[in-house]
Length: 176
Image (cartoon, rainbow, N blue to C red):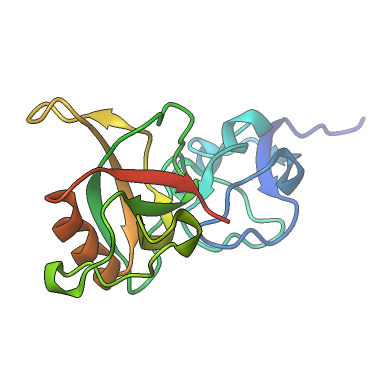
């Protein structure tokens, strides 16, 4: 007589997945594990992880649980998170996208917008933040009727954006 062990599918990391990385289908695999209450909150299908963002470093072979895979990115140490009122088409911006934030108003130290001037635009715009991470998709600002996106960026960039929002529109542009 042979004994059989009842198993269940559990999603595990196929390789190291660094904190903040978007998880692709190639980053995970399914392993059959003995049935246990410990796997109750483990992901059991690859599509539950694909497109998610690692909330902590995930070692190769480590089972994935909902608490370590999220649809929301992670702010890096030294970053702050703010809502930015943006203009233009924002429907395609998703959580985790990396964008430059550009003001239609030229940079001016007297207003606190001291980031780099975009000479390719004839000095008519000001790059307020390079490589800001969208923390979620665009949402309506009930107070102003505008559109907000929450971004993670440096404190200096946040201050420039807060000052620039009062002067004119800010665009989210795909990072170069």
